[in-house]
Image 1 (cartoon, helix red, strand yellow):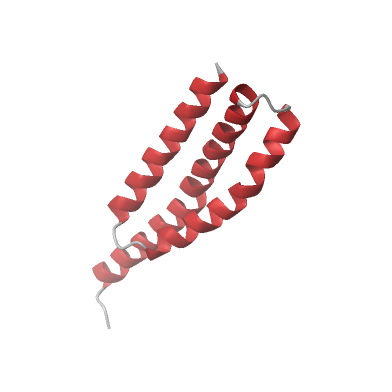
Image 2 (tube, one colour):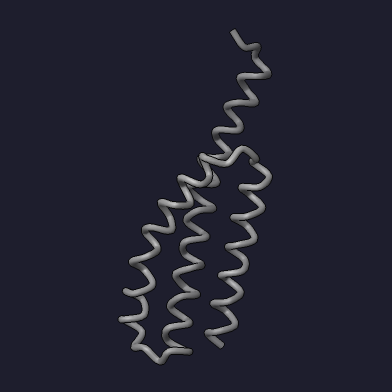
Length: 99
């Protein structure tokens, strides 16, 4: 049987993955949806309602993919780095395009 520090480390690693998949995955998906909507409205000239609907549909697949990816990766540092960088990238893209 594993000792207490090993169990605690494992539980913290699992909790970190759950937070990454749930919270950071949601933030990434939201930022990607906002960026997609901004691109469709301000670059392609779509009506806002159509742009929101079109950007939201693939967000469900993105979120599911992020969840699977988080639990498939070996490195917690890589997970948090990629999710943070991608979220910031999409957020910046959405902010720049929406101006």
